[in-house]
Image (cartoon, rainbow, N blue to C red; front, side, top):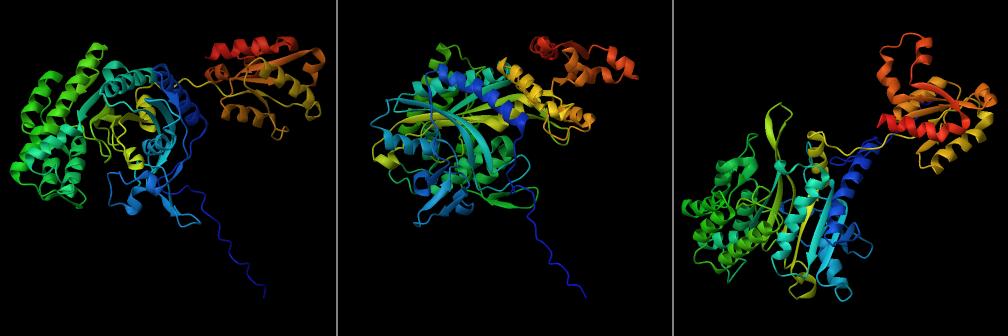
Length: 499
């Protein structure tokens, strides 16, 4: 009896949970959008910087909001020397390491922008990925909040350059010092011993940061004993008293009709706290400078509900929120929400140098912004696929290569079909799959007569529904015969007609 062959165990052709692949159009649209954003950064005087995707865990630090996640929310491993390494979880922590390492060679202030993927070891879910792109801009070495005001104004310009209309977003600004002042008044912050009530403050920060999702009642529950969600999962709270929670909730609700009125209300709430009053003064300065630059409250808004989740912020924090409605998966209207955020992190470089180094910056969530542009029908205009030179006679491949070289030298994206040329229909299917604007055909007869056939594939799709015979197809304007010497000029015309 013949032996059975052992079953071959093959790997599943799937990415890990929480990861995804990006294909041609996605990559091109993202690049086009980032070109516009980084163009704004460049115009403001910022320089590009690329850092390693891998840092030491020690250099990255522990600043993620979900500190109860395995590996503190990062993908980490030990190298051959038993040193702990990790994929970067944002682009700011690597900047702090770079500045500390090269501070004697870099200008002060140092203004840089960076673009790239980051990784977080968080629970994956619909629309929540473990790898995503960020686009950052930071100023290191400037203590004045004029740098924060500039970042907010630049963020506003970047969103508009990317395609977000002025009426469809607002940059909301707050200050961690004001929140610290409120918590000091509420009795959950002792400026002489910052380690006291540290766990409670972390819960308060995360609760306020979820205001848009949980609402005031949900935040109030997290300030108290805790909250049970719709699935039955319970999240422990900060266990503040009702009086303490009242102070925090008054802070959240402190926004008024103008930045000046909001700051007056905040002054009342932090009365008796030096750090809180210092934070209010900084907010007033940001509002004044922004107004002077032409960025009024319709673009830049003082909003105490903004806290940001990362633990390294020390002063002003800001968030860009898109204000237009979209439909969720159940067809319900909801606002799109935040696409960018940042703030001041004066102690991040100090971890390396022991000396205070002021810094502030912003990070745009690239994938979220692309999704927002798609929801508004404003994705970047991406060029069509390449012109396809079909192969009618494989013995004449040199002639086809000559054609494609002429087109490329003229700046036209083009390729010769390199699959099996026996079935011409498959060549046109390939051209369609490539979103090709034009197909070029030269058989033996055309070559002998010094002509080529060119097909306007975009127009052909539009007309195909009304064509019933070969004669009609040959007569319609989506296909034409031209002189071989006219190839470049006529292909350019056809591409221009399709755009």
